[in-house]
Length: 353
Image (cartoon, rainbow, N blue to C red; front, top):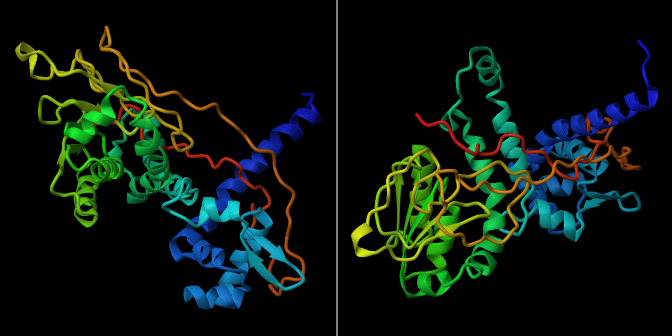
């Protein structure tokens, strides 16, 4: 067997990049859970000072900082022995309510990996794994990763892009948010349009529990209700807008008096009346503006666009010189993932109980 050395090296470079992203994921989630990124974004610090800010162990923080600097997630100044974050790093890593929150993607990815034994068994048996069977971090990470995109786009650009929808919501409309998850999109709309009534539905009961609590905390419980229901069985009729948290929404004009009820769905995620497309996987927060579509001529749902797959080349390790840590940076931190992979976001057609 003749091995092409060039092709082998090209493949191994991709492998190392994937390995680096995989190994680094845990440290990113640690930084998220302990507030390390937010604390470092407040100002440069050494391991001892950052540990004091976050009430953590200086020894562990020293190792964490070495790995983060080697991976390009934070900066190191050998002259002062301190670490810091650029504005761009802080924007992506330290603000859960900003336009991008990258740690949520790793929370989601690591949570999804916990189902690996069951998914492996499903390959053997042909059985299914329901959305509700995943670890809690899948639901939380999904919301943490996608909510910033909704915050940045849903009210400022997506809703105004729909013909007449903004004015109708201002005046008062009935809205169904299907597959609402933890209710992020529903609550954002309810805050902006206090004259409208919103019903969020999701078949995962634990997500709905969290959504109800968050609606109460946000002060919109008077105009938002949440129910446990599948996309084919959510309650209510006469909605002015039916939406999913995706890049495509479908709206309809008020129905004639003779056809006020929503037509029964002909397939999960589709309907003979203009209902929204089901959610499809994505590897980054949705950024495209929504479109208004006319009623579909068949029961086929309109898929959300899938982003092109990307890979980043491995980045040489940049261990900070002058570090007081006696240990090397954590394995895999040398490969900086420019586009963190989220291979297990919410499926396009989630299995139902």
